Length: 59
Image (cartoon, rainbow, N blue to C red; front, side, top):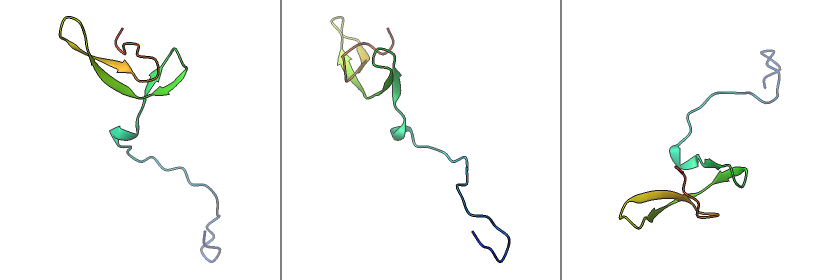
């Protein structure tokens, strides 16, 4: 804010990029963002799972 230039103080909304590490996947069973881990399935494939409850992400 600069009263000499007529600028009013307050909150300025500005679009900015966000790093992928600051993004969480939404977990519908707990209704909030959740961390994700990797689990090896019985057939040897790897799958993403939610850390809070162990459910598969892609299921």
